[in-house]
Image (tube, rainbow over all chains, first blue to last red):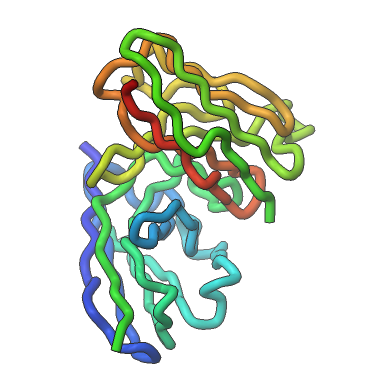
Length: 122
Length: 112
C-alpha cells in the first residue's frame, strides 16, 4: 500500500524558514517523480514544485521560485521542501504527491499524503 | 500557464440522477505526438486529500466505480456521474498535465 506521510508544518513568522518532509513507502521511491501541491484554507489546489526520479529535472511555480527548494533522498525514501522567506500567502495545507511517471514533465498525481499545515503569521 | 475553468462552481443533484461537470482549458491539452489529452479529474471529500479518478481525459483509475466517466478533447472536457450516490458528495477538480500543472477552481457537488 502506498503511503505518503508529511511532517514539518507549523506556525512561523513572515520572513522565516521551514522545512517540510515526506516519508514514502509501499512503492519503489526512486522509480517516480514527486511533487508538492498546496491548498490554502477553503481554496483550490496549487502545484508548488516537482522533482524527477533522479533529481535531474526540477520545477517550481512562479509564486515560490527563488524562495523554495525541493529535494529528495532516494536512500531514505524521502522528499523535502525547504521554504525560505515565507509570506502570509504561503499559508496552506501542503501535500506530498506521487507522480505516475519517473519524469516530472507531465505531472499526474496518483497518490497523495494527508498534508501538513503551514501557517505564516506574526 | 494554461488556465483551467470549471463550470458550474457548485451543483446540487438528486440521488440516482446524473451529474455533469465541465472543464475548459485556455489552450489545447491534446498532445500531437500521441493524440492523448493530458487532462485528469480528482475527487476531494471533506478533510481528505484529493483522489485521482480519471486520466487521459477518459481513463478511469483502478478501483473507481464505472458510474464515473470522462469525455472531451482539445479544450473542452466533461466529468459525468451517471447515477449520483451519497458518497459522491465532494469537490471535483480538473487538472491539465500537458505543461506546468494547473487545476480548475473546483466544483462542489451536493445532494438535492
